[in-house]
Image (tube, rainbow, N blue to C red; front, side):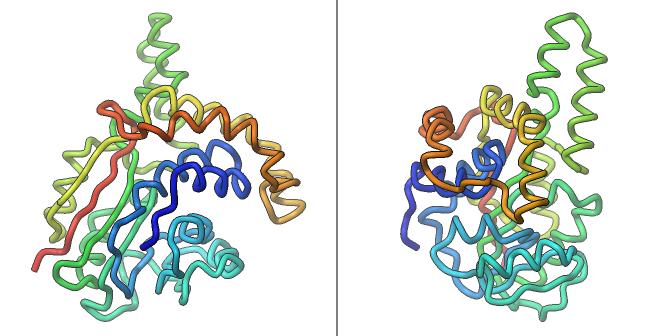
Length: 265
């Protein structure tokens, strides 16, 4: 597929999302550029469709999500040819129905994630690529608040803070990459590529964006969009601030992990 440069991806995301979410999604979107995702493609946990619309040069074939509200919003983005409300552990599709699948920052929210991975393997054809991103075990430890508390000699408070932030992020899993790799292998996938991304400084930007982004919730409730003025001039200062982090997004101590796996034959 045509490759969108990281700078363009950042502009697009900043004009449609709160800055902290736009930052992370732009980094992740850059990883998909140039990847071969043969149709039909399943978007597992498609949410509101924003990510698919800004990342790919075509509408993905099926967007699946357990909630109706984001699926209705996804209709506005026209990011998927078909939107399906269903549980990821019991997909209403025939075996080997899809030639590829993506799941961006979704699986960490699912308690019984192993069942979803097995079901994903069932609906994929042998050799089909499955691309996913998840936070890893470093996420709660590398949070700015957790690091600050440890620096003050309060390690238990740092652990409590990390657990609290996981809770408000609705994370059921922040596991080491090795654990995710084992889950994928047991479900019937082989891993072709993986890397960590989003270092501590980037994670701090994401972390502080949660309280700073609260006004965006009001704007969203009143207008249906996250920004009152979704224009470049309104986000240019954010673009200048965040752009350097997109130059080298991979990091050996990153708080997130990218996987490119394939369905075993």
